[in-house]
Each structure stands twice: as C-alpha cells, then as structure tokens.
Length: 379
View 1 (cartoon, one colour):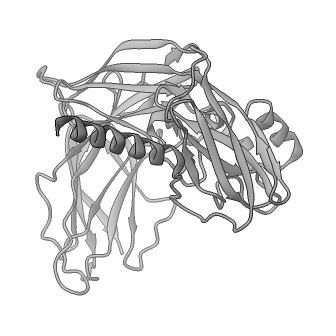
View 2 (cartoon, helix red, strand yellow):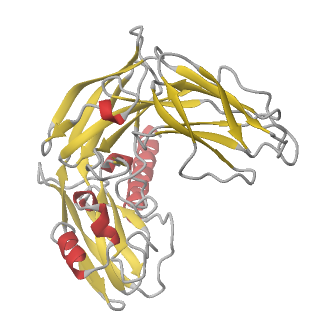
C-alpha cells in the first residue's frame, strides 16, 4: 500500500512539474489567434548554465507616434523551464524586443538608456538592438532566439535610527544621480524587482525598492554597472494635525503623515547623498543609512479668508535648491495647515486643489534653526 501511495505521489509531482513548464501566464494582453511562435533558451552568462525559471516577455519595438516601448504584450509572458527553454505562442505580427527577468541578473532592457527605449528613431533603436535581441514575425511562423543574461551588481547595507536601533520594514531605493541639468534623479528597478509581465508602466528604470529585515539589513541585486545613490523611505505618522475638514460624501480627510526620505549616509537632500560606483557584477557591502529627526522643524500657518471646500485643498512646500524634496499637508476646516519634519532650507509654499492654482511661484519661507509658525497664504 505504501509503495502504491509513493508512486501516486511522485506521479502527481511529475505531472504538476510538466504543467508548470508549459503553461504561460498573461498579466496583460491576450494571445493573437493563429499568431506566430517564439521559442528559445535563456542562459546565465557567468555560469553558462540554463537560467532556471527565468521570466521571458516580448516588448513591442516602438513605432513613430506610439509613445515609446511598453504597449500591448502580444502573447503575454512565460516562465522558462528547468532547462531554460521557453515557448511564447499566439504572437501578433510585428517586431519585439526579447526581455528576460531573473533575480540577480541584469535584464537586457536595463542595459540601454530609457530615452532610447521611448525613441522610435532609427538611430535610437539601433543602439537598443546592439544590446537587446529582437524578433520579427509576419504571420504564423515560428522563430527561435537564445538569450544570455549577465550577472548584475548588488548593493547592500543597513538602516538604523540615530539611537543605534535597526530600522525594520523600511523601503530602500536605488537611484542614478541626475545630470547637472536634470530636474530629478531616476529610480532604478533591478531584475529581481520586475513584475512578471516585463516592463512597469512602459519604463525600465522605475519603481523598485527593497525592504529592510528585522535587523535593518537590505540588499538590492541585478543592477547594471554605474553610479548610484541609495535612500531609505521612513513613513512617519502625523504627530499633530489641524482639525480635519469634512470631505464630500461624509467622513473627514486626515494628514497621512510624512515620507521621510533619507539618502546615505544621513542626508535629507540629495545634494548631501554619497554616490556609489558599481562595476560589472560587483558586490558593494556596508552602506549605512542613519535616520534622525534631530534638527527638523514645523512649518504651519493658515489661509486668509479661508472657506470650507470639502477637504480638497492641500499646501505644498518645495525646496528652492532641490526639486526632489517636498512636504505637503491638508488644509483644515478652519484654514490651518501644519507640515512636519522640515529641515533647514529655503522653500516656496503653494496651495493646490479645491479650485486653487498650484503655480511654480509661491510664498517664500526660510527655515533656519527653528519652527516657522506664522505663514499666511492668500486665497
């Protein structure tokens, strides 16, 4: 009896494994009836072994007027089997980039500039094709492509509060430093952080982070070589808020608190962030981020002539020297507002929502060494 049970059990495992290897998932888009087929293998560049269970997807090559890469995923995406083999069926006619996501490895689309991925010009697409394999189907034919993914770089470290205790469950993000003329840094998504469908919102570099464990430790892998800044995002509850304004449909709107972004080693502005240079496949350990609330201030005030607008107005504070830094708060029923965790600096404050115009100019506020509690904004 035990032998029969064992045979039945092993047979079930074998059947289940075969199903896992052949059933594709389609997070978005549907297969084209009678479309083409793309088959191939994925290999690891560092070991030359099959890329077990790698995620393979097709991204349409951008055409003029398409707005760039990241449109309809004809045929969805699939998981390669234990031999690295994959099969994508029902692919609509067209040209596609073949993308692979595997933890710890650089996906092909990560190795090219985001601007080139959005640019349908022949020059930009030539640069992409030098690093990313492309397939073209005209009908119901089958085409084969083999892809090799390279081991990515990794960056790891620890996030602590200023009393030395670990900061657990904190999201840590990796950014590429902005150019001298850029208005913002670019968040980088490693291969291990991609969704199975491939691109997120049509942009390769965007939206990824790692969460610290109970020791405050983090590690982000699968990064292309380059220069990076690292930041921790600590969500702080609002310690004090004005009387919340009622919102349409009942209830009241509350200030959600502050997203305190701290760049390694302990900077609240990206101008004070340390830049880490990673070579190909390099592991950079020992990054330390210290989260401190010392030297932070409150900026509060009220809107003159304020009337209740259903809790839709919000006050927004921007740093004049760092476009990546901002604070915001809801306006209370009595027109008051309060923003917390504001470091020293020079800021502009504007009003948004509730029919107010949020313009590039606003009231200037200087915060140096103490709270600012008498800001008056005109309606």
